[in-house]
Image (cartoon, rainbow over all chains, first blue to last red; front, side):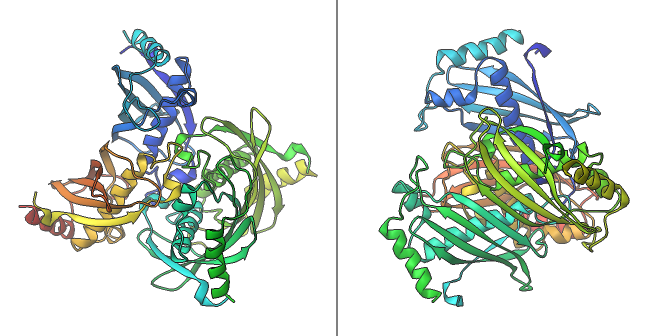
Length: 141
Length: 141
Length: 141
Length: 141
């Protein structure tokens, strides 16, 4: 994967996201993956809320994450999101979270999503989303 | 208000609910108010999800809370919920959160709710909910 | 209060912040107040984490909020934070949350904070914070 | 693994845990894993907060989860927690989340944890924790 496919988005750690260990509670990194995913779609020419507006959903069916170093309150972190795999009814995205100041890699992970309708039935991606993901694939070719 | 109207529910503090001060982050007490509210309705003979199933909603339009002492990870707290005011289109509930072991009062607060339909238009409460809240009023008379 | 004292910060609504009513769950606005508060301090020349680094804390002792209109997934909202009251051992801040695109006022609220040490004992504000808040007061004079 | 090692804990889904798809937002299942883990330790004769009280921590270094079916507001779910692997400096736990009424399997996953001191340096487990986990291993033998 080249860097062309990677979409970056920054966010500042909230106090609400920390825990009694003094660092960010682990599930918040996975919420940041969601933030990165939204920016990825926007950058590639779509918006997830438009996608939902047309009756399609992208529920998360699998997630994994590795936590390598801690983020702390008020740190600015960068979420780097890229397309890992694109099939007719599912996609897998890859994420890296780095500390913006130090460049230190804090967490990595994947999410896998099905394309469904509102009732949760699996669907083929509509053409607009295929175009979005193809743009991601070409960028990473 | 007598104690007859008060509905109690217990919960154990999650690590996810703590913050870098080593105590529970303040908005989580307000989420516990929601837990208490659900139990209040259930105890009085209704369930909020049934209410939604009939097309009614109880969005929070006002909240206030005072934080008196800290809850910590793994503490068991009791949420004591009671009806403060019941009108044709709105209700106000009152909450106390106490540490179950020590009895120490940790937080108090109110939430005020409108009765609306799915589009957010204000509605009169349906008869079933009027009965629920009247039971609360009688208990506290 | 003139607008000079108001510190604005923008954020985009996360899917994690929505609930089954299709809109933002109410306590998340209060977390956004925290985001606004952090930016207020930064803009006025301090940073909350430095403040903690010196052994001082600003626990929330009271909060109130009114919810006027709903924020939805992917909306950009602006948190407008200003100083409401500054005393030797406590401060009160005021917040407005508006939809960035429409200008619609979504929520308002206050938080009141004590200045404490790490053990939760009330302290007078250190001089650095007094300077920060005086800057806020002068701006709003 | 026999069922002897499995520690079960129940919880009721909060409105705060739902999202605009009308179901539980995926990271909340992973917070429920934390609830299950706390009960696992308690049942086996330890408590995580005591462990921290002695200066040891169990940060999550890896997590994975599969989401098979949705939990909804007010559902009661059971978290079934068991020991997957126990080494001198790390443990892996396995979780299943089922709907209590229907028995439907909603989610599965693992968390891997290091034993560290307060500064995050990896440590061997203290004897008390070794005893706890051995009890888990024996139960599952």
